Length: 118
Figure (cartoon, rainbow, N blue to C red):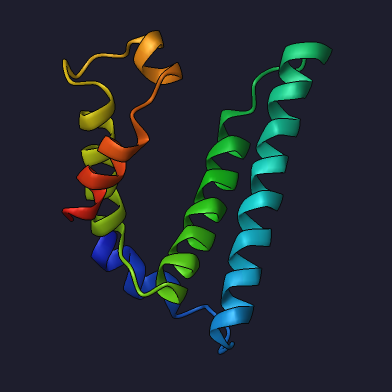
């Protein structure tokens, strides 16, 4: 399945809400589901519980749904944000490899300019 197909299928289950309420639901949902992933990792890292990969994938799928709702609310698409992210990363890492110095000392003007070209 590609992102365009996913968008259509997933948004069938979104409630009819105002843009404001879509933004609120999406933001809270992303935070809540992210918190559930943090809890899974915490239990694995500190309590010796086996890593529940299936549960992580379930929560990631929920995050995708909420991101999709947010994209709809801001009239954007997965493709647009994918392209923006790659443009930003290419501006940040000119040699296309992670570099801690570039990660810490970012040229945010260059990154913004790169993303604005999308």
